[in-house]
Image 1 (cartoon, rainbow, N blue to C red):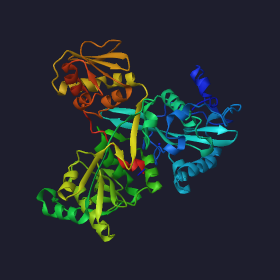
Image 2 (image 1 turned 60 degrees about the vertical axis):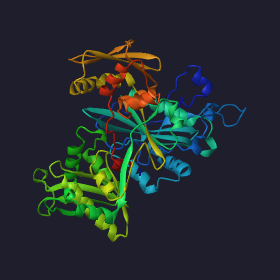
Image 3 (image 1 turned 90 degrees about the vertical axis):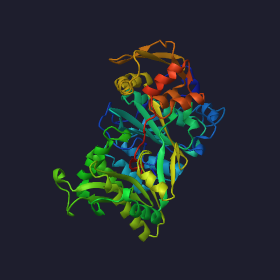
Image 4 (image 1 turned 180 degrees about the vertical axis):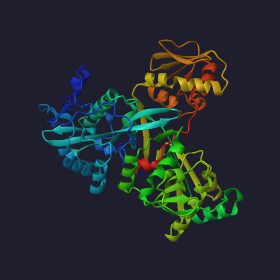
Length: 492
């Protein structure tokens, strides 16, 4: 399943002495647009952040050696630049050398992203040679009633002959500065070495969830259990590209108040289809089998995206929940015809279809890692995000009938803030904590406000330190664990 610095790259000694990192823009490289909004899709590059241990060395100590070609030699000042179209061949060669991928077709497809610009890539150059690379993407993520600007980091890597000089760390620092300048609220990436990023405030966040069971056992359960029988048979057939509005409509109906799903505009949907990251899309039709050209009289009430032995997205119109079961039956039947004996379903943890897989003697996976990879996020303006979240916190307090007024202090790596909860609003006050407060580091604060952790569990494990029982009770209401989940289709 599948987006350092200098004006130049500064020497580590220069960086620690207070000189700021500058990104050089070569020649007529176009200026990077600020605050691009409405960009949809994957929060990271389609093949994820592949900064592997051998790419920059498993030991982070080696990243502080300074940028030298040879020990004791005159330092070679490397340049961090934004890429331009002419750099694409060199970028592809670097990715092939470091990651043995992507394929040439996949790389060309990434350039067709409707929101892609060459300046979305940061490069470290020695002369004309590209030594290191990082790709930035811009997306919009649903977080309940909020829409968050998200920057994805992908394909961070360094050529073997330039490793050990801190280039990846410099690219990461420069990228974070650009993300803040452009107004992104979250940084997101996928990695197999989360320890590499923790020291910079990145936190493991979101869980992958999928179930797997035998195809024949699934069919037997759906046919024998009355609760899984569908009242009206639907027509199931492969999707046709002219029916794209139906997929867009059903997706919008399912992610309105979701936590973690990404916006998908029509150009982005078309790009997803052209990438061929899946085998087929099945659609469920309520009524005669005809093309859906008029969305107002739409007969398509559900769809399933399949790849190999996996269903990576299975959604239906709210008034046709049984469409998902019929699509699953069809997927199982086709898998049996291909001599595939087990099927996986990727969906949120609260999806009732996971129960069906359990009844079919299947297994469920709901963990932070998936195939050795972790999602990590970084709040680029933690206090600004918390301030924007205040209206939602007030709604949670009201829904839970929290006794008000009350207060909850937050001490995050020495910085103090106070949430004052009244019947009318929730306000964030700086440099105050009150009697009841929580103490934590930035990473745990990130996981708390994004709803990744249970407050009681985090306190028990010592990740959150509470001054009073009242602090735990208030935090449990304001920061409940949320169904934070991102559809895998955007990561193919």
